Image 1 (cartoon, helix red, strand yellow):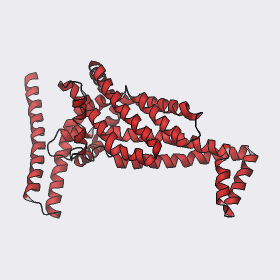
Image 2 (cartoon, rainbow, N blue to C red):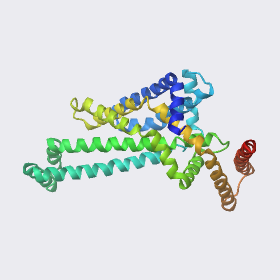
Image 3 (cartoon, rainbow, N blue to C red):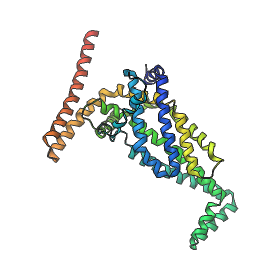
Image 4 (tube, one colour):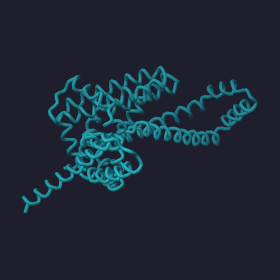
Length: 340
């Protein structure tokens, strides 16, 4: 079976439990979006202290069902503290993912506004005169009047709204894509003792240099459905409130809510895919991590004076990695001998 088939099999086996925890995660997302009505800063603040830890609860619980863990609120929230441990700190690369998504948002907004402005200016002479009038007001220092004219212009409102929705939808898609791909890193960090999340991410990034093409084929073949689900849900959320308010921010929040609602049944399957991806590439990660750990060890010894405790931790990490590799090689040799 390929990765998608294995993930689908696990998903179907524990379907009710997986849907229950996915629904719980979505409730937290919707509650955070509701609080975001009070200010965008509040929603952004909730991402690292609420949403990311709850996502980790979702991922860890989703994986634990196959190990015999029962469904309960206590078991689900037992993983909350793990989000703040060195093992998972930096594993998802939330900040860098957000910055890349923000760059996409502003870049796409600029392109969309530019294209739509050119379209209207070349086809609507009256609109062109309005833009010239607003520009003249601003040039003469009448900024309040210029802003009022800008905010009351129906075409400008439409253009800015469309730009916000298009760039917002694709920025959300990009952010979740980055976080989703990085959700393989916690499996790597948790499989090796004494490995911080940031080092595990570095190993993951190094690994992609060697098997990126194969990794991407497996990943996109198994998870492609997430993109249309997100975009359809986002569009549905936007349309649900577009005729009720003129505030683009509120409409954007509604779009985000629609996207997460549409993704709810897909999330557990997606996480099952990432776990199957890790199982397939685990041995390659280990081989790379041994080499990386040894190089880092030598560099640290040269550039820094290690305490005895730090040196013991590095020695233990390298030893654990080597043991995993040796055990795997031994298992493969025994299997080959049995086949002969």
